[in-house]
Structure formats: C-alpha cells, structure tokens
Image 1 (cartoon, helix red, strand yellow):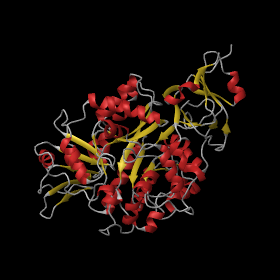
Image 2 (cartoon, helix red, strand yellow):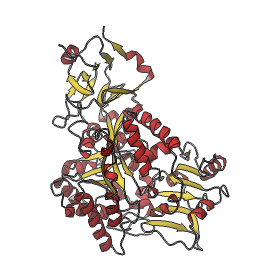
Image 3 (spheres, one colour):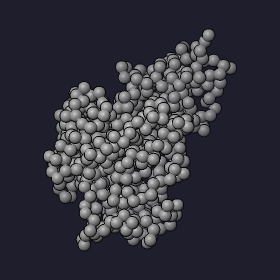
Length: 569
C-alpha cells in the first residue's frame, strides 16, 4: 500500500547541506512521520496523496532549520518579554535610561529589573543609576551579560559597601573614596544577583513560550542554552536557574517544547570557578534531570558544562598574551588562584572532572592566552580522540597554531560574527587594529579543518541568523563596510553550514539533524526568495521566513503565505 507524505514542498531550491556534498540542491522535498522522506520532484510527486499538505515555494530557498549553538534562551526570553527594556530603541542615552527606570512598574517581588543597556552606544555606565528610585531595589543588566548596574537600595540589600572586598574574577567598580558606584562586572555581579528573588514561574513560563514562538518565526529549530544551573546568579541576568531548567523539562513533558534544546550546566559563574564547585555540581544529579523524566534527548538534553576561563576585552578581564586596553594589562584567567600557574592548574582540574563524567565542556575564552590555556586543558583531560567534542566559545588566536591543534584533536569552536560587527569599533580601540583584524579567523579555522559554528549569543545580539551570516561574509562594523580583501571572510553557504550541519556536530546530532537528507529530522526553514549570492548577501535579512517546520510539525507560517498551503485533491 502506498505511503503518502504528510507534507511536500515543491518548486523550491532545496539546499540539503549534505556534509558529503555541500553544494547539493534539489527542487522538492517530502516529509513523513517527522522525517525527510524524499527529495526531487519525481519522488515527491509519487508521495503526494489526497491528504498531503502541499506547499509551493515559488522558487524560495528551503534550508535545514537553523541551529543557534550559543543562545541564552531563558535570558533572551526574559530580556524580550519579562524585563524593562533598555535597548537603543527604548532609551538612546543615559538620561532616557533614567527616565525609563523612574517610570517603570515595580515587580510583584518588590524589585525593578531591566535589561539591554550598552556602553558602546550610551557611554560610560559608572554611577548612572545609583540614585534612582530611592527605597526600591533596581538592577539593570547590560546587553553583554557581563555587567550590571544597581541602585543604592539593591546594594544595601546585598550588603555591598566600601568594605566589601573585590570579587574573584570580577570588578566592583568604586568611586575615589572606595564606595561602590553601582557598576559590577563579571564575577562581582553575583554579589547582587544572589540576593534577588527567583523569577516566578508565572512570569517565566509565558516568556519562554513567546520566545520559542519568536525563534520559530526566524526559522530556528534548535539551540544550545549555554549556562543553566545553580551558579546562574553569576551569569547574564541570573534567570537561568535550576528552576528554569526544571521548567524546560516540564514544557517538554507537556509536549509544549518544540525547539530542540541542548543545555550546558553552570556550576560557577563568570568569575572564580573552582574544581570543587564543579565536582559538587556533577555530584548533584542535575545532569540526569531530563533523562530521569523520560524526556527524549533529541528534544531536551543536558550536554555538558559551561566554564568561564576569562571575561571580555572591554572589561579588561580577557587574558591576552600581549597588553591591551587603556590599562595596558594582559588581564588574567577568572579561574580561582593567586597566580597564572595556579589558575591554569585549576582549569586543568575542572576539565578532568567534566571529561571524566563523560560530558562536554564549552569553555568561554575571549583572549588568545585564555584560548590557548583552554585547549591545553582539554588535551590534558585525556580526550585525545575528541569523543567529547569539547569546544571553545568566542575564542581569540595569536596565530594559526592553536587552530591546527584544535582540528587535530576534534576540539570545536563556536563564535559570534554579529558581536564582532556590532561592537567592532570599540573592540578595535581596545585591541588595536592588528589584533582586531584577525579576530574571529573564520577562513583560517575552515582551512585548518576546525569544525566551527556561528551563533548569536542572544540576548547579547539579535537571534536573527540572517544578520549573523551577513556579518560573517562581510566582516564589517558599524563604521566600516568590511574589506573585500579580508582573508578571514567566508561564503554565505559556508556560513549557513556553520548554523546547520556543523552546529549539529557540536550537539553530537549530525546523524539526525542539520541536513535535508532522507531519514533526517524534518527541521526546515523556507525562505521567500532564492539563496542570494555572496555579492548580494546584504539582501538576506530582507528575505522573509515563510514556513518553519520542527520534527515535521509546522511551528511557524507567515500570514502572507497562507494560500500556499493546500491539500492535493
């Protein structure tokens, strides 16, 4: 008896992203029982029955569902739908930020929580919110997730004063008399975040579901949330708690979770990581939280552990081999220890614990010295064959030696071209032209054979992958269009592979997602137009996402495309 398809898409440019044949294109695709069941018009026509949903792509590109391999889903949900917004469209200068905070409603827990300010556009943040809303605690997280501003009441509740010692791996910015200015960076953020009440489920649940809907409208079907767990107070806005991870599990059990989510657990925040904290976290049973509920690992999976090796250049907390920034310092690892040698040794102990538990490590490293130390720690942990697929997050490289080592040992690389584009002008000033020019060496990584992916790091930048691809191809900044002779440019299709098939590799999932081949998961994104050539790549963000399918289920359909769906009679 003929088995007809559930869904077919015809008259499309099907970019299969076949790892063995990256340029393979078909003209039609069929879906049955959540899987790709056929390619090519002849096969698809034979699979089309009276109940089959038929979509006429009208020449649009059909690509695998986008896999954002570094997207803070919980924090992005709260930033978009749970907090007072302080992005450039809402508050264009510090005076406007203050005005927004002064009129913001107080939350049910008595706090005002805001998100999105950015020193790149607003200027120095020190002291800007210290005196707002007397008697009401106020916290405002910046766009990078590495800084927060607190008012006097929030500092009082947290017990932060002139007598508070500096935090390991972070900066408590002080006035000349030693009093706190309200600006806390990296590891110091936890001084305030840890006393904030947890985000209530009645706020977080609808925010997560709305964010899921928004990501599907962008064609995103998979992501990695890099840092949920007991140390959430030291990361981003602190929303990514153990309770938030449990809520994701509940949504999966209730079959409301349609995104495929991989999770990195967080046992230490953006400063002061220790082997002891990681060992205690691994012994807590959190790694089995999803499997113990019978959740399909293809839907929600705890993949490994996030480790902060250093901070970020603009805060002076990245560890570089050469001095940088106004302070002309090298920075250092934010791992616990009194010297570089002690901090490196502690990083090695942390990696041995993660590797020994059979888990993947995602290591945040933004300085070249930190990246080199992280790679050495991975190798010393014993995963010489690369079975764990440990990877570097962000990454900086003084030359191609470290990239070659990574390729030889199956160490991955996840980085963020849109951050480079949007913050590039300030990074250029901090790092200098030479180091900035080789920042995110995508072509060198490709040539070395490193399996790398491109990701948004939302809410640090927009989750719109189309903008990320343009940034990877053009490598421009807000003030410069990008050098057409830049040796680190890659092509648009190479960038697309890094957000589909290569992102699936990071997830240990290339056997079931990331390409449009028969038997693979029917995670699809249909564009309104053909895939643009590299000369026209700037047109990509204007291309509409007309249809998103996750596991064979339609999860987004553009209103203007309703007439494209029909049943073949």
